[in-house]
Image 1 (cartoon, rainbow, N blue to C red):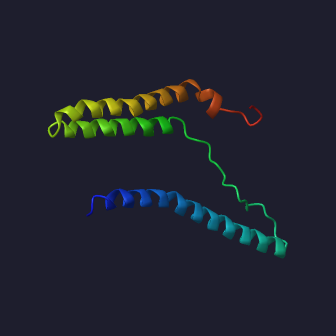
Image 2: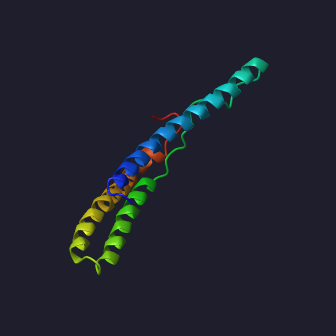
Image 3: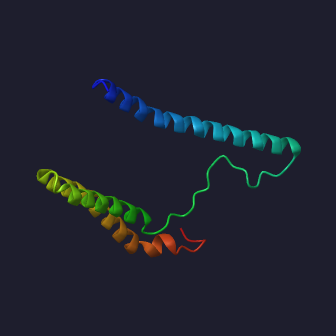
Length: 125
């Protein structure tokens, strides 16, 4: 493959992913609007129909565990690269420590604020 063609392909593919996501979102909302119009024409209630997505409450510790797992994964990758490139080992371990520490902090934050966010009464804010 031509050395100039590789970056061009990478940039085009990288830019096309968000464009495709925006187009898919547009057509999804458009189809929901058609369903809502049909329901209004027939006089049906619009109870379960909405253009906004319903958000589920986030699970405690989930985001911290995901980021921590990314850091551990990079660390494991560095361990297997140790035999190939010794100088890359410490660089990759340093890189792995960033998401690992962020994940640990997120887990600690969720633990400290567990009662505030996850044991809310319906009338509390």
